[in-house]
Image (cartoon, rainbow, N blue to C red):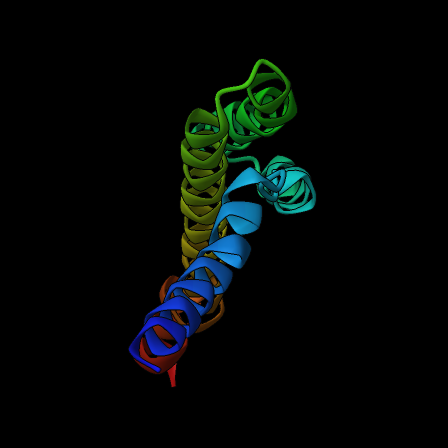
Length: 124
């Protein structure tokens, strides 16, 4: 009875490690779509720093499959995480630039004609 219990416990522990091994051996997501979108958005916002981060993320995304095929599964996973981080940094730079452009437009709208109104109040 005790042998059956220990044998059953051994089978359960072996079965629980199989998905983990399969999960580690899968090709990690290279985040190429995110890298391309963040680069294109930064091209439209004229952000040189964002473009640099976006191009680096595209290069890193391209290297994920090469590193995985060489047998370095952990290195491919790390390169995938680096790609995602660089793409997110590039998107943050894009949204920061959009915020600056909106604030600049609002500043021009509200304070751009200040000299015109100053003369109008003096003459009126």
